[in-house]
Length: 334
Ligand SMILES: [Zn+2]
Image (cartoon, rainbow, N blue to C red):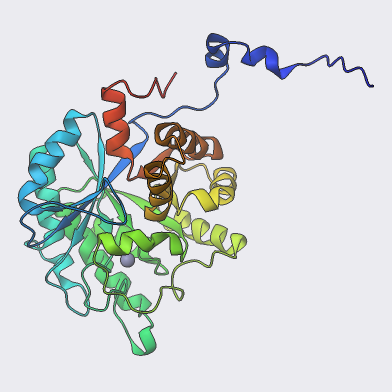
């Protein structure tokens, strides 16, 4: 039998709650969380998503009331996704001042003047083929025509009142195109939360239902290959060089190594997007009684922070805000 007499015993700092709190390294609060929301044209009532229980598609007529409720819960950051019923081959509704994107932003601004509005900037919910831009032959997306259109969409969103834009199309040069278009139009104060490393991932499955995606095929020709970490770092370097203000990794849980690497590589804020499949995995396991949902959600959020994320986009944001309000989870921050 060996006798162990360690000089340093880590358990000394885990002895009771007060000591654990004293040395706690990572926290999260509503100051870190962005709430994604789906708004569909033509709906008359909110629809709960089968693949994302607890998440809804809202009609435009309910958006104002919903945003007021979010603001009252203390939610400060919102990421609207529009589901268009005016689709065409290029997604031109997105750069109309009367289009869904512009209308959503104006409604949110009216409902909650202080809410930070960060719309998704892409075409996949506005094109009849479901791809993230202008399609050429064999399902290949034309990069340079698409980024010119992204510039138009970005200016329209800024004119409607967006504070920050979240381009997600994964086109080369899209941050430059958007930054230049914004600056030319006098929106140099509008910032860019870049989907810097967005992987082509099966974890988006539930999102496709959420936005009624028309996509046939896949996005492997523009979204990042999940087998490649170094290539992903190049994507992030490019977005930083092109003027992105915040760099995001998406999805989150299977890619925490890249959140940690990105934290080392950049001094910009780092964001992570906990996508639909990650949400669904926890939610359905909890509904089946296999997981303690609140404990697992808290552990996941802290895990994102520990990996290096400053900001988390999560479908759990509203539920976390409600749990906090109702005292159903103890203090998430110290
Ligand atoms: Zn897209």
